[in-house]
Length: 211
Image 1 (spheres, rainbow, N blue to C red):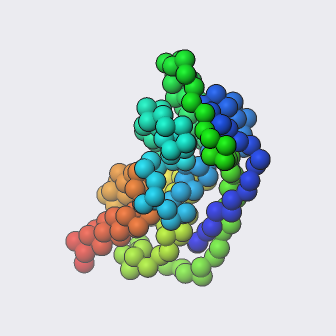
Image 2 (tube, helix red, strand yellow; image 1 turned 90 degrees about the horizontal axis):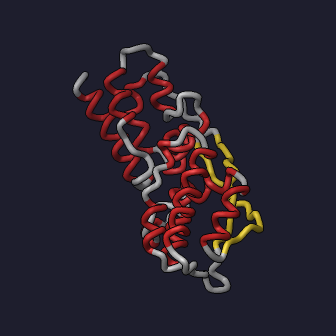
């Protein structure tokens, strides 16, 4: 499958950390998804210092490098749901607010704009029957397909695993070693290109050794 993230403006915005915290308490969960994972598909990683939009805004618009670094350390993959992620973001911001009396404001026009996402899924028509075929398929997948099967899958599957692991698990214990290798990949602190390359290398090495 392949996918695209459709950005939807919510009309919510924040000009300082207090307003950001207050909006985070009630904003749509799709905003958390968009501002943490959406950047992977927006093809501008070279223009950003940090991995998520909250950290980048704190650094660029508030000039608060301390909270930006703290927000950048949040790994959404350790959270089983977006509500748990929401709580950690709010805790980081509240901790920063308790440390300082001065709350910096963003200049007019540089407010944090809350955007939520809607995932649109496309059927590529590509089908495989054997796990060995993955070593040929992976390098040719689009980055958005990698996003869907590796990133989005962790949100929608019961096991909170990527689609490759879920599919391979259906073969019993035969591919346990391969599954363990895939499970050790951190899909957040990387780019989709690097994720595709790392995943492809794992499949190539695994099946090459069994040829």
